[in-house]
Length: 294
Image 1 (cartoon, helix red, strand yellow):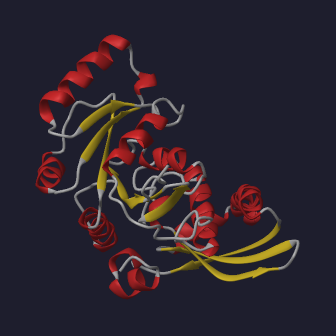
Image 2: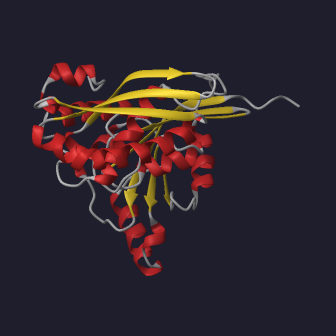
Image 3: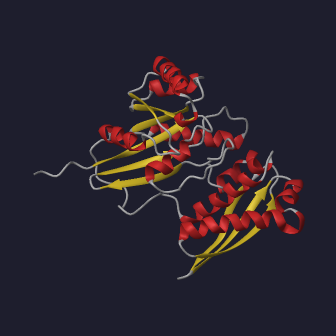
């Protein structure tokens, strides 16, 4: 019997903020790659998650939520989304089952795109059956797509069906990446993202959105990883809030981050954090470039 042809392609996940795109990618890949919080704009970078099987390889891209950009950082984020659209073999359009408002601009972009679009109505576990029926009817009427599926990414509901649908649309192609690779991002990137996630979860108002995290040092031995992180904020007052009284707030962030880092790296972690003020970094192209947004 002839072997099945190998399929490989790029699947890009798009939608508004807070629709569960990152949760979906983590569920599809089977690993926690994208950070997840209830705050909008949690995802800032385009993050690839790679799923390899015996005769397929899918490179998922989790992209920032679609917004109307207000400043330079957001403009760079939306540029990443447009780049993700341009090279997609399949598009996963994720919407919230509690939302019946279509993004007209996004709808127009998707309708002009040559790649097949799968509309995933997420968080169906949070609505009653009668409401879900209305929501599905709304999207069936307002969105012209190849397939529409109700899913609950956090619960794993219909996630295997999404994979089955994707495999029918992928082109025949040899693998793009080695079988064992899970992402195109290095461990340093995920270390920075984990720290930023804990900041998003621990602070309110403007602090989480003014923060950028970089890893200045990442030294790995057989049993220990030493990580030195720099947390940038835009104002001196934000630095004080972030650190807290006698460093108590920042210490809590470090403790929570270290636990996740040890799970990720499967080693003990020594985490050192420094806070620096970088005025208006979100508006300045040279800093956006240094932080990997441009």
